[in-house]
Length: 297
Image 1 (cartoon, helix red, strand yellow):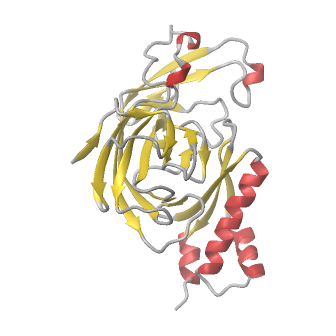
Image 2 (image 1 turned 120 degrees about the vertical axis):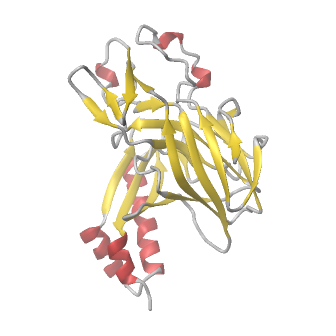
């Protein structure tokens, strides 16, 4: 098995990153990841003021996928997400939707056992492991791992679970896939700026798809197809995700422009991934049971 270890980290996605591993299309790869704080927090007695903020949102990688070229699509089957035995959360003044009302920072460490995260003595929550940061190198420049965009990145999409497939546009040779920022739990919006931040291991299968056109990430689950978009304005992100789904429906059906829009309005859902980064992320979801009935014969 191909393994990229959790000391093989990058803090930005860029074509300048040196590959941690090279693998053929169709290969299985394990990414060992740190949490978003690079495992700096182990106790509730710690202060966020002591953290090295230059080591936030590290991503493990990158993986150079042989034969991936600009204009291709990288298919990432998420086969398993195994998380550590505890996770951490933080409340930080000025961070998140409630940050303007947070007067004192606080760290919460939550033990995880038998698939449950202990929030308090009275409350345990079933974990749903997800990937917060997953993306490829952009065509130009360098994008911090903490930022989302057409390349993927810090989308904090709560649907990115084991058993799902992520489709990413390829902008540079080899794609240069990296990932991290796992969550044991994350609510849509991630309104307090952190989910249940955990370290762990992600097992994926990477496949290069030729002759495909994709401008933004797409995600397929057992039941739904999602288009994902990010923008500094949330409404603009929602609009782009909606337009991308509308274009997909028109390309895979005989519906007119108006009919495709009506279908999205009747049976689709505009949803939020996260609203705490400089760029905000939205997804638009359609049930596959609906889309399958539209397929051209």
